[in-house]
Length: 620
Image 1: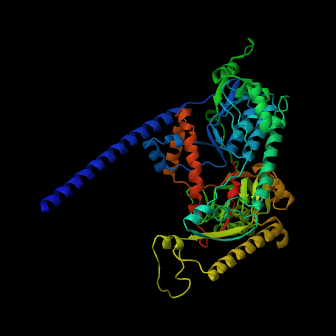
Image 2: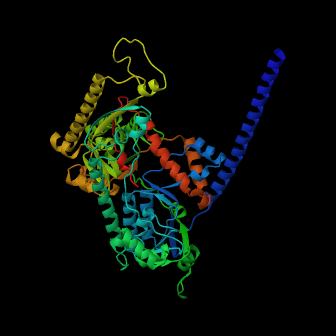
């Protein structure tokens, strides 16, 4: 027996040594790869990029347009590459960097045109696309043409393409404009079958987060509210496309949003050819495959015209100064970005965590050179506790005689609005989703499920609260206590908005009840002060602080020099990958969406389980 034990022990020891040897081998290979990439990266950086005369700037938007790039998780990225999942790595393009690059190209005599390659653009909000589109319109005022190309145009891709002078589609492509919708899964019947009892506590007629657990379909209140702002967004989309494409006389509102009868008739007229359909109704201007499209651009048929060079966005951007360049001015305006759900604690860069975000606000408060702060928010809300903690820091900024302006991105609702209400001014885009002033709490008990399979629970406790848990039924008295707490939270929400917006509690309650509003509605209802973008907010902050000469700085989470080095290394390495690798497959995108919907609950960690969150603010 002792021999057998020693044999097994030696087997494990040798096995672990073998695993360790393999681990070291993999690490050494990774180290050599990293060294090689560093060498190549340095060689590339040493190359002086020159912009040739008569160049077109190419924006090949392969990935996501975002407010701020997410920090790179080194171990996660290495793990993806080792497991062959590196296709999930997207490129991120910051909205303001894109705008600055286009505006610089507008005044650059060497840049004579702009090419939008949109096949890989996976997501962007309507307000981001509009801001970029406005920069493209300014670019065109210099007499410089803009061309757009995509293998197929999604709704997001087409909206940006509409700002081009000329839209090209391959003969085997299509344009798919589906409109907007809010669709949710409802679990009541499943919970009933599993004998799971959901306990729901909420205030707000339109606070529909909890509906999937108590209903089998969307309530009439939710349908009414959602239909209102969805129609506004879709009407805005149609009108903007018509305005930008007015040179094409074939394009009508019916081309963008046809009824099924006319769509069927028009498709039959072109024998079901989707590209010919797009051409016939004015959605595109020509049908060409990519190679022919590029050849036509770079080699004009006019013999007197010189061949056109094309420079990629990343190379051209590397020749420009940073987004916010300090000049040494005495006064500063700080820009602080916050995106994702609002949670308690610290963040990995994908959420707004109160401790992490407050540290950024404190930096601005303690810097005497900073006279105003612009907080750019893009969040559906989250923890009521964390939202209040952040609001307190906004109030502390104002107490320190700093002017505070909130710039709303695609969505700043519920907890996001809780924070924004404390600002001196709120700027929203017309298509921003905001409001959703309501609160809820929920949990489930499985006592009936356990009893069904023969498991019972019994015991003793020192008080009614000590015996409370998921495996026990909730007493009516305790349910009433929870509801009292939620109602108190809603009353506090109304008070917060009332004080911040100088409105009566009754006036706030009238536009609250969990209802979602667009930026246009928010302006009419007194929830926002002005319609505009981030630059509008910066200008507003300067006016409030009476600043004529100032620098703009961005306050961001601090990253160690080592982390920053490897982050930059990985970001630079992406440029060496082919587009087919960078582009996210549709099935990966599907699972990413499902993962996001399934995991957001785990990211909400309010210590009192009170949430100010807008689930319907994510649209498709």
